[in-house]
Length: 227
Image (cartoon, rainbow, N blue to C red; front, side, top):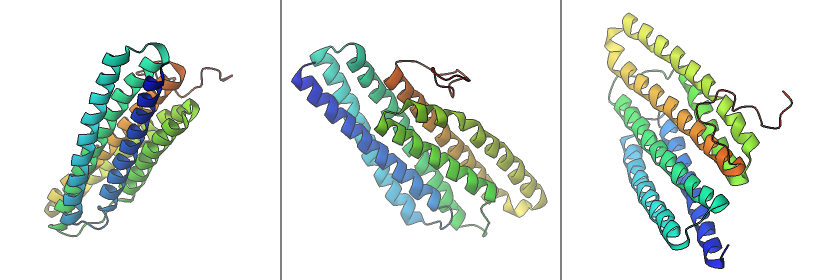
């Protein structure tokens, strides 16, 4: 590997990790806004999302430049492919964070509602999955990434329970239909955050092990596991 390629790959990796931190912070702030809805927070997150979009474009351009200049193969090509995939996931995660903040801001203008405990637990789990998938990327730890993948079904189950709970509330209290619909949207967005966290974890497995594990229910098991 040439010295210039090594340098450019290291810069690419650092900027991807910067984007990881920005996206995680945005989602964390958006979920916190559910407890204290504030339109100003939503506006700030939109600005932060714009910065993430700009970084996403910059990283894609950098990847294309490296591909054109060096024509990398094997591990280097896998690293660049992974950056392209993960930055796409992070950009979508940031968009979901803005959507959550918008729904939180909408709640501020309506009747006071209590955020269901199930939704709070679901949000905490999805945020933890995002954090752990990013940590697995930082550490290049495919075993931790596999553990993240096994947790997606937990969030899916939370989402199903929340939908049922919100539907029952709307039946009992028609005056709460609008805020419940906002919470319904939040739940769907949170569920998607967990999906993207899973995708990032799968990309980490590909980066470290060279194995494509999408659409495989057994990915939680390590390839060298005795189980």
